[in-house]
Length: 178
Image (cartoon, rainbow, N blue to C red; front, side, top):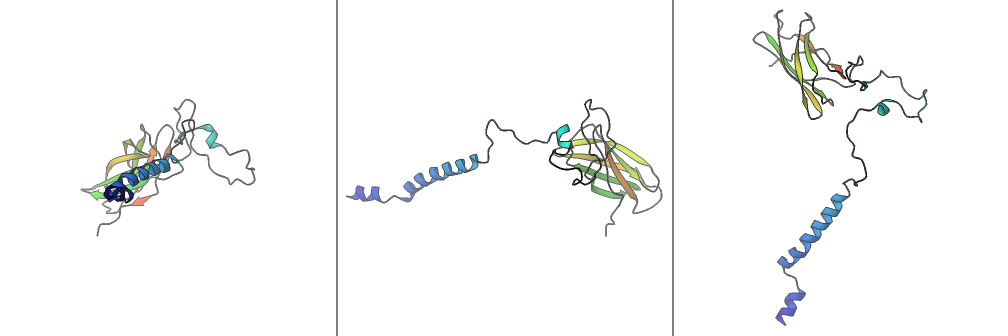
């Protein structure tokens, strides 16, 4: 009789042995709904001519006028004259030992072979550095240029250019450290 009661009333260990696999199966089934089927395509950032043009269902009068966006050329060697439709973010900027030191990034663009340029707006002097590719971002490493006018808050601008992309930051000043 003792064994019949023990079999009818599950112990906590027996309950765990039953519930844990059931939860595991439910979790796997739940997450499998997030997976794509083998025949479907996975979205990935690619440049194509088709995505740059408006769809056939939109009328020309309902579309706002816009500047052209950069697109890949067939040869891939020509620089675009249209600016990147994003912005360059200034990461750091400071004046140290008579030099302006700036680092920046171009979010949404991940490519190598580009050039970052730091330009002092007061004098027009500039310095260039090679850009570094990151995950969904292109980094402009530390750029340093001598500040000769004695200004503690020089104004500057950072630009980025490559074969396919060009971007320019807003004119920026060094924030004072208080």
